[in-house]
Length: 519
Image (cartoon, rainbow, N blue to C red; front, side, top):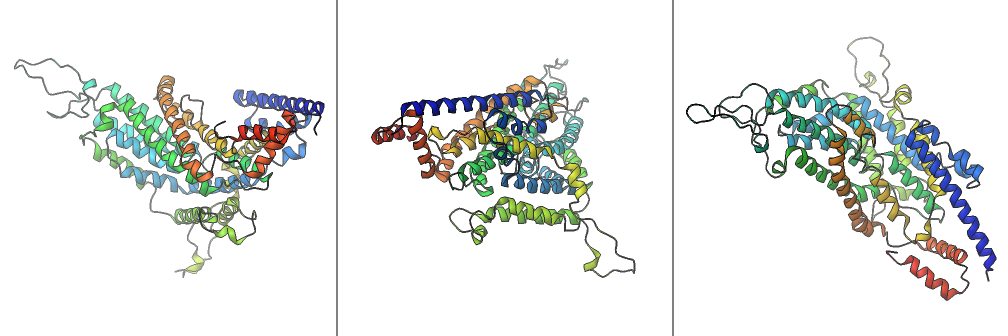
């Protein structure tokens, strides 16, 4: 039987530790928001704060800075750098744009699709930075062809929109003269520039949620979930395949809804339903995109190598632990291999494969000595382009999360972790919210109110989609409504101490209320 004074002592100590942890969390939040210290330096504060405050021993804090998820991030980011250095991502983006017409609404979709896809594999910032010059070139061509200041040929209305029409005086015959570019107004062009700029930032933010390697919060969530479940001898089930199953459908839905919202706001509701029949400037715009594509030259050997590694990496991730069947991960003892092993394997292979077709496998036409060929990825390239501060940011996030667990809610932790993690990428309303927002705002086409208005509606829709995902296919696949038996036992013990209940029937009554779904 548990004495009441022991329960009070335990509860009081628990509350004190929670308050100290909350203080450390608040302090770090202030430093992160104000950037009084560099973000990676702030991420080191748990190593000092938690031991001094008595929240966690230093060894327990430090082990959070290099985890399996951290190695997954190293492998994934190394591969992303290889994609960027080979220009493969730019070739894919321009190829998709060549398939789209010159209508602004469909051009917007053409910009969003490659940005969304690329941000699953390279950083959101890099995806946005790549697309900005392409968008600028297309907008300039659009201005020259469809928004020309000189009168078009008789009877030509460049972009038929009634709200931009200009009331022209009639001539002596009572007929209106040849229409000046009725919708080729500066206001119309300015709206298109705003929409095209916002679409790539929003597509990058949304695309980062579609895969586990898409953005840093995803990796932090995986590391925290794995650590939390391992304490009870369990596997969290959060891997590349399960993340795709949960997040990719919602990410695609969010992309479509964002496209519709931006089209309605910047191009008008009528264009969301009916496609413009005007073909003015379509050839010129396609020529502009084709010229940028041709600057890349023929597909290089390095691009082929990177694409081959990309297909191998995706195959390894998907086939390691597929649902309802045995994958190659079953060939090893439980816990011996993970997605990080595949990522590091491919990353190491990039340092081995040559960036140019080696002469050693072909007959040479001369007697010259074969020259040295660099590999697809070099250490100098990795050192220069790898965001090393991300490792500390990941570690700081893991350290904070390990000190802020709360199983007493009686909920499967994944039910909260998945939606909250994905929602962190849905920051569409302010220029400082995400790096892609900052980049497109720096183009000069946008005002803060433009991002606030558009971002408000996109935020609401995307959050609703994530909630729908969590309570439909996420609930069916992950069983969010079921708390594992091992965790359920931990909740029982916690309730026994915090409530001081010694009667088993009373404890069962309290536990059943806490573990009841929806409470």
